[in-house]
Image 1 (cartoon, rainbow, N blue to C red):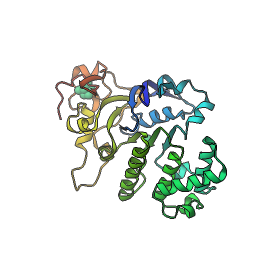
Image 2: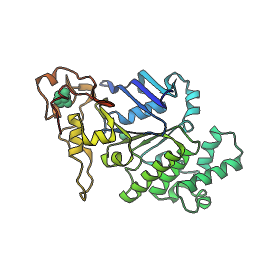
Image 3: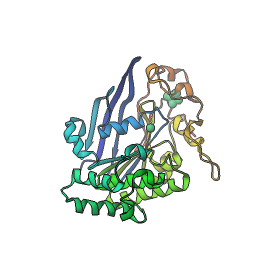
Image 4: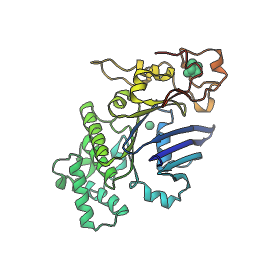
Amino acid sequence: TAKLLEVNNLHTSFKTEDGVVPSVGGVSFTVGRGETLAIVGESGSGKSVTSLSIMGLVGSPGKVTAGEIRLEGKDLLQLSKREMRKYRGNVISMIFQEPMSSLNPVFTVGNQIREVIQQHRRMSKQEAKARSIEMLDRVGIPGAAKVAGYFPHQLSGGMRQRVMIAMALACQPKLLIADEPTTALDVTIQAQILKLIGQLSKEENTGIILITHDLGVVAEMADRVVVMYAGEVVEEANVFDLFEKPGHPYTIGLLASLPKLNEQRERLDSIPGTVPNLLRMPGGCPFHPRCPYAQEQCTKVHPDLREKASGHQVRCLRMEEVSP
Ligand code: SF4
Ligand code: MG
């Protein structure tokens, strides 16, 4: 049977005054039913553009220029805008970092969830209202019936993110994309929200794409991990192999920048250097200006993804010599 999601050779680029920026340059991965795939990378790595491409939400001047995005075998890139609207919020849902920007300030949260349900399900207003309160209750909001009558600004950041999760899961999507879902929240609330997403998706066998720059979150949530750099996948592995036997110098750097127990959590940008300007990509391996293993050949040859072990792929010319 087909995987829940198969992304094949996805290319998404943006037209700018200075030229065409290839934000996503030939990305492939799969997500199984009930599986959590983490996509990790710094900002500018292409991880958010990848998720927007799957949602059909890349707007002008951006464009998906090649590839396939197959959901249960069906290529979403072949759907009309109208057909895609039937999928969004229904078969595929997304939660973002900042719920305030996705919630409408002038409608109560209950009404907003009810709207989403009625858009996709044949339900009376009363039934949809009951369902929205049930969802608010399921995401752990105390006094759900009362809170349904609140406006977004009457809720805390953590409660708003719970509302977003209730809305995203109200139509029982097969795939949930969570883009930095907890970055804006404090650490205790973060852990609660992640636990909630994990628990609800397990109950419904939902596939999850978790976009994050936080390897601590990856360790807690993911089954498999895709590491992106400069618009490409540089490593893919199950979560154990990624942490135990990382193969790409970039991944090794990310793991080395992970704080030890009891240290304050840091961001990934503690690797020296920055993501290259995609308009002026260095020749050869895009990571070579930052790579401690780089040699002459790395400035000339663009590496392919190669198999390091079963289910473990690495894009590095020196894979055999590199070790953490
Ligand atoms: Fe580093 Fe060379 Fe491997 Fe690129 S190909 S990651 S520069 S060793
Ligand atoms: Mg982002």
